[in-house]
Length: 179
Ligand code: IMP
Ligand code: MG
Image (cartoon, rainbow, N blue to C red; front, side):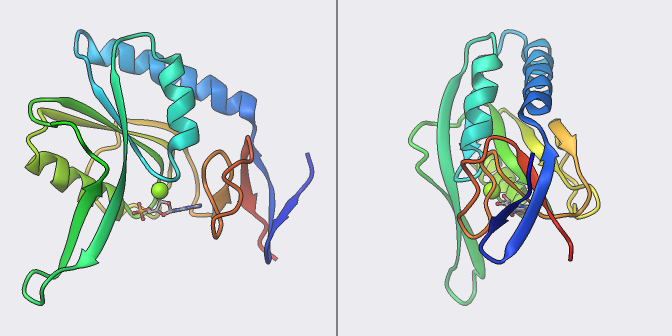
């Protein structure tokens, strides 16, 4: 497979679609084992997770409901500082087992916001599933229950992940070529 260019950056093939499929299948099997008789709500975080979520749920051989949300963070009043909100959530979280589906966990800032919001909404239990995890960039303490790949602190695109909005439609993962 050849390198690709997105705007000013070059990327090289990194994780093949076959390898992704293998790990997604294994993750679904692990989830089935852990979740037992629960009917979890899978909550995909847009935009990046839509490709991974769509493959993952089709490998999951158990009942679930699925929804997608965006996380918005904005500055509230001077006294309240930064406020975050889940946009697009129109079902109740109260008492539910929620499986948050992310494309990548980098610093962990995003899932920390999501965690607070879901706890506040009364989730019974919250699990985190991420296609990619960058352990060297992670600065938070929330455990990532399911991760398909741990990768070094390098920028990647494809399979839902973007560079300036580009590259989400590539069916495998590419990493940046440092030049
Ligand atoms: P966080 O630092 O864990 O909050 O990650 C925030 C977001 O940064 C992720 O959901 C991605 O949208 C984006 N991100 C982090 N690393 C990468 C990468 O290597 N490629 C593309 N997007 C990334
Ligand atoms: Mg994202």
